[in-house]
Image (tube, helix red, strand yellow):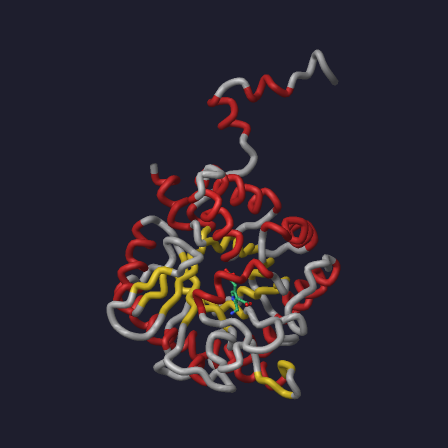
Length: 324
Ligand code: PBG
């Protein structure tokens, strides 16, 4: 059937109809809000390139978590800025590390907020790389032990889910094994499976103080040119025991999100990363675009591509709009 019998504009002709036939919508239930925790007291330092996002000491962090929960956002993912950094990132797996303390503090005051932790060494190593350095490169297998230790210590402190973001081969299996050996068989893993070596992480590295001090991350994060390889990464992570897989960044990788969702029967998360957030904020502040509309369009596109879950610095803004 074609024109003039068929006229697609009919279903666009009024608001009620448009609402009825809308195929994709955002829900607060799909959102994960990233937060940065730092040492000290009464610290709430705005991240220059990420307006509205802060490095927060525990006191402010717990208050923030209450607000997040009151807005209906179900989950946060935590990044820590440690007291000290060293070659092995040892502050990431100590009982009184910044993240371990943060988890206990929030679980005491906001017990129903779902706590996810980013499992990676880059915020904790003096060289800023995501693992142990050998011969000027990150040594895969030596790093696995430390990642599993870090994941276990997060879980022992009360984390509800761990999210390895390092891109070492075999890390999901190693983390699953150590969690299972310690009776955390029901603790889910959300794997950053297809994580690209992306310039879109720029603002985050200011926020988390995690920029590599030499070289870059291209020997472990993926080449932005590759799509088939992402499917292999995801397949392996699923075999190793990932419960949710993630594509990161989101916007330049919508095709990967789509392929992941159509290829695998598993929940897909997408990370709408710092650079994607900052670009919209910067343009909106200049009056060049309508920030709220762009935010909505961008997040819808990520869902339409196939993401079930979105990690985004816009989570609070979206939740406020959805509440109205
Ligand atoms: C690594 C990690 C990074 C991000 C999340 N986890 C940075 C990196 O790989 O360099 C980036 C998130 C963002 O840009 O919003 N721990």
